[in-house]
Length: 85
Ligand SMILES: [Zn+2]
Image 1 (cartoon, rainbow, N blue to C red):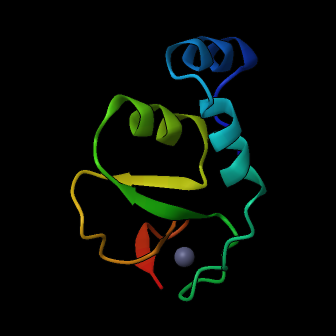
Image 2: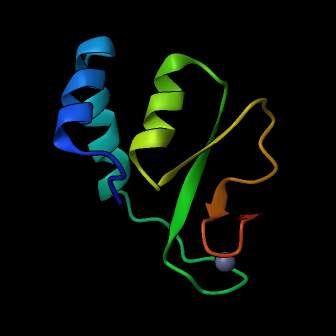
């Protein structure tokens, strides 16, 4: 789910050209449901705190950002706050 409004989206697109497409890629991605609670509110995990990933994580619930790799798992559940594969 997109968490920011169109105005902010346009703003970060100017700062990080192409990020809008990346956001859409995550928004349209079919992610597995949580292996623990069955929630569909899940995200793909990415590592590395750089401006682009920080804005990506701020823009879509389907991207979960962690500071450093390796990631504990491929996916993250926004419902139970747990990583899963
Ligand atoms: Zn869950």
